[in-house]
Amino acid sequence: MTETQNMTDNFDKEKEAERGMSFSITQIKAKEGKYTTIPDTKYNARDTFDIDCDWEIPGFSEDTANVPDVDPTYKFDPDTTKAILAGFAHNRRVMIQGYHGTGKSTHIEQVAARLNWPCVRINLDSHVSRIDLIGKDTIVLQEGKQITQWKEGLLPWSIQNPVALVFDEYDAGRPDVMFVIQRILESEGKLTLLDQNLVIRPHPAFRLFATSNTIGLGDTTGLYHGTQQINQGQMDRWNIVSTLNYLPHDHEAGIVLAKLPEFNTDEGLATIDKMVTLADLTREGFVNGDLSTLMSPRTVIAWAENMLIFDDREMAFRVAFLNKCDEAERPIIAEYYQRCFGIELPQSAIKNIAVPN
Image (cartoon, rainbow, N blue to C red; front, top):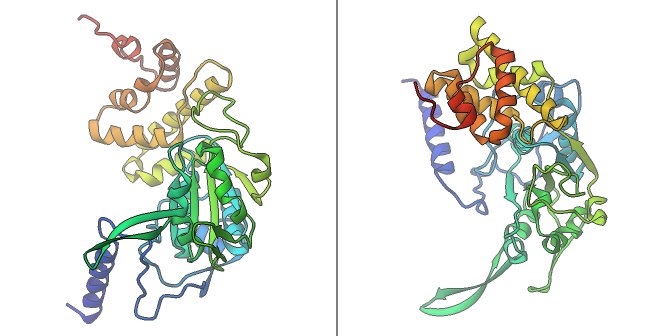
């Protein structure tokens, strides 16, 4: 075995040990002086993200445990990618809005992965409270005695480090909690910790992003129960709001194929084309009011993955999408399926009852 191979193997083991099955995201380990908290290199947008743009984007030459893994099959949407890159390069506050399953969060993650920029995602829900974000006093044992010690939350930690903080499901957060981050939505906004009499100045490489299904005006479609209206004074602080909805037919088919190269045959390509056509029909049906559920790109990929598992296209479709639908709407979906594939789904799948032989 050559010296180069030995070095590669050692690096892989070291990297695997560093990432592990779990790790504390607040513990960034320096790589023997190589790690820097300030971007130390630049990446060309055209070469790195395959988009029609020649921006030079700052990034890091070394990765850490908090840097997401690169998905080499990921396809970048040009407009959304530009919005995210503007956030990284110019410290803009960027929100990505769109339907479910379009890849809003993974878009930010994959940009961060290619820039070697540490990225932390926090899923906002109705149970996330102020102390979850800011921190709280905890009782710890020190020299055999119980003492009260302040435990910092992820928000103040992120602000003080070179981290791209992503608030997922931003429109699901409790309105009173959302005001905690009101001040840091400004590019130079400092965070005041009243509990500690402390004012935190943001790190120069701190970046803030958010994803949401609605645009802050509440759920108007009936798809996203639990979402909240967002205070318009807070919405006004987001410098860039980009919309990422369902992609053109050929682009979506290309994403499925990139994820599942097993379909890269004449028959497989024809199957994927029909699958995406069926997904398009469900979206049209939703817009027209015929359906209350629609197929996202995530669902199409799940359907294709299930086909490889079950080796049965109809069964894979049932477990990936049809079984999630209202029984009253299944005949419409079965009609879409027959239109695309020329095959009728069994009555047992449509009516969810056993049909005697």
